[in-house]
Image 1 (cartoon, rainbow, N blue to C red):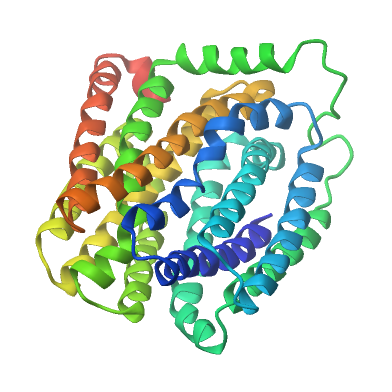
Image 2 (tube, helix red, strand yellow; image 1 turned 90 degrees about the horizontal axis):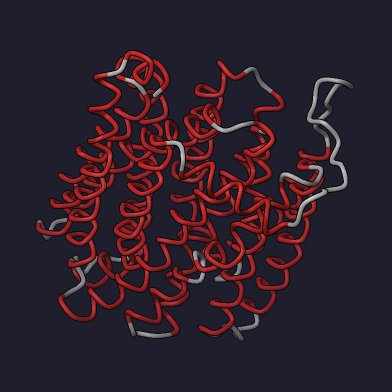
Amino acid sequence: MWTAAVVSRFGDSLRNAAMPLLAASLTDEPLLVALVSACGYVPWILFGLLGGAVADRIDQRRAMWTVDAVRALILAAFAVVVARGDATIGLLLAVAFVLTTLQTLFDNAATAFLPTLLPQETLGSANARLQTGQQVAGGFVAAPLMPVLLAVGVAVPYGVDAATYALATLLILSIHIPRGTGPAPPTAPARSLRADIGDGLRTLWRDPPLRALCIATTVCNVGVGALVATLVLHVTGWLDAGNTVYALALTSYSAGSVAGGFCAGRIAARIGRIRSVCLAGAVQFVPLLVIGTVREVWALLAGLTVFGLMGLVWNVNQVTLMQERSPAEMLGRMSAAFRTLTIGAGALGAFLGGVVATTWGLNAPALCAAALVGLSVTVLLPVVRAADSSPTDRSTV
């Protein structure tokens, strides 16, 4: 499972870096470029809850390899279209939308599947290793390689991504679960999908730490979505730099994320998971402010390094807290409810980034992100204070 995740992230990083550049080559409208990123979030709003309910009902391993096989076919076809020079903004929007729609099922299934393979006490380190491995593959291997592949051919990153999905399909198929140790086989549901979705939402909302974490991550992701959607314009427009600097920016973020993977567990062991997330948000405010005010390449690279480090501290502890506090039979639904709100916020952020960049300048999305990250920290503070005053809460968050 780890190898499949790392291989897939390598291909996805190539595609995610190449798509904004392809979009920028097809149009000079910031809003249209941002909409390509927005279509990578919108399916979570439309189908995220449904994907979680389905993930709790079906064989999760089968869902994962099936989704990867379909994504391999889609990207192979897209690579052919790009190679022929027939790509359009409309096609980019459609491909991003379909791939993320499939991702809603895959991610919820994978989140629910991991705890069936490992004891609960190892989930924190497992999530850290998963996310660190993905950042190494995406940042240190894919990002520096992306300009080389683009020089070979504009369609090459998409072809490679298709190949990595095909390989991931085979790797997931190869996972052997000894009889009696894996998840229980799915049974015929007695309730409707709508009722299952409602249960997931209610259970998430009734858990104070998870509720606060969900709200904080949603607010934060609006800002992050604005920054990510316009980062290529920040580099090529505001900083007047080229594709190489854009690749270095992605590499810097990944370098920080890898460091964050090694720190996440240690920080959580010292101060608890919810406090780790709160600390990460407080620190992230500073580099975002630097990125938005200092018109130098070094400021962007240094800022993204720190931002990436604290981002993985946030993500590892967020996912692990969800897995630890959710009932096993509802993990897919609760994960879906969480992701629908938090990832869906990225769509709003991407649209907001395009509007803000057009209205106030290409550096404005970074400043917007700083303000929203700061706001997200204030959402978490009441839960931190409650945990400090309660020994029980302190031990569980």
